[in-house]
Length: 329
Image (tube, rainbow, N blue to C red; front, top):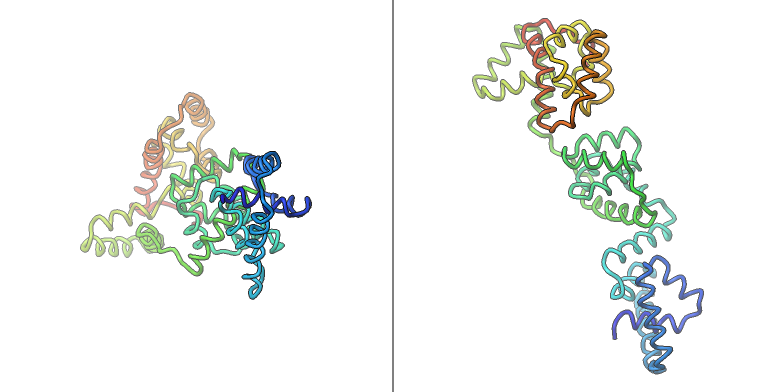
């Protein structure tokens, strides 16, 4: 006997209110399947009393086996209704039952997780799920998690946050249930630092040294690995450092950057960088920049990165010469 027939037969043995409670959370087409079975039973009159009793006894036996433990609604749903539903719908119902029976917000557990745990749990998840989770976090943690995601998935998640789709409460709870389950596997886990992050820290430390001592340290590094030494030099000043550059140094660097390149470099830049650059160019240069932006098509990611390098390179040259002024990092 199929699960649909068993479910229909069980519902025939229950009062309307209890039957309605059991059907809550199912999709319309799933309820329709059970309803069609009920209709066939009614028309054909093929259900024997013995069969009906057998199904009810099976149901009662399932409950009886759980008496030693606390009754588990999740286990009941798995045993009784899983053959009627697809896996996705079963998980959705379980998530909703867990939320209701626990009397708690499913996202509460997610909010308590560390940024490292969240990054690991969200890896491989759909951008829509990531967007929903990020929107439920406090802004600072959301920003921290977003910054650590892979660039491609980060952009997709941000687009979903900027143009949110209508997501029902049931779907959101299913997303929360899935992420919460994954979080259990990453309790206490800490993300390993990437080589670039380590070299960036070293670069910031060295950039704070007196020029002669800094160059001496870089020369020592170069003896072991010339490529690493070059990377550290470049990481001393990056695009993200622009808000920390003193105005005078910023003005001197921007004189050598064409308006077209600057327009591409500013594509998708954060407000702090845009404000810093715009406040350090003349009105004439600003007008040229606006004209280039109005005529510009959406650039490729590589074009944006290359343009930003052209903006940063004069700042790196000034840093090499010891003439770069920092307003704070």
